[in-house]
Amino acid sequence: ELGGRSAASQDFTGHSRRLTLLRGEAYFSVASDPGRPFIVAAGGGETKALGTRFNIHRGDDHVTVTAAEHSVEVALAGGSSQELAAGWQLSYSASGLGAAVEADLAVVEAWRRGRLIYHGAPLRRVLDDIERHRGGMILLMSGRLGTVPVSAAFDTASADAALDTIAGMLPLRVVRAGGIVFLYEA
Image 1 (cartoon, one colour):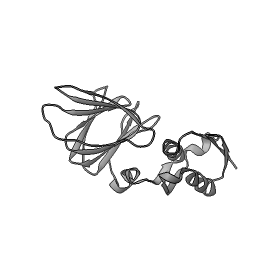
Image 2 (spheres, one colour):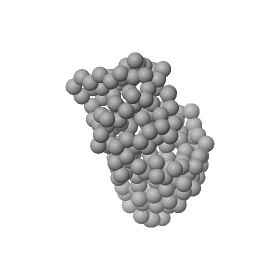
Image 3 (tube, rainbow, N blue to C red):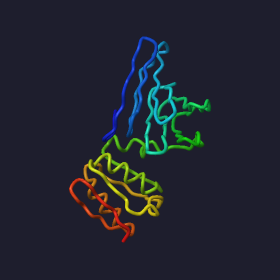
């Protein structure tokens, strides 16, 4: 299942089932087939299904993998890898694998029910997700505010209302110009 403005390519053969998550977010429910492993490449790493259900979120500079059922193995091109059990997630980037942390599966999977839920997520990530569900572009004109933590819940069908809510929570002013939204520090 692909999230808003997400893209993936596939390469299924008689020996393997490989997908590449090019951008966005995807949730996988995988049928077991020991003769054809299911592997998802994203941002310099690969996730191999050892069970049946998992989520991958590909941001601009990191990838977050969450095991929802059974387990997955996350491996980087440099050779480091980690098995991730159900209910756990980890992120990786060019600097390596992060530590596994317990995941709130209701939050991770909320996008599948038309919701975006955040607990202390950096503003830049929140805006990236809203942009994927809204369309057009969202430009944050203050790099300083990109790391401000945001805790909120939004409906993906009301992305513009989400931007107005964020502007009400933070010192931001929203300016809309066609399909582009500019967020200026107030």
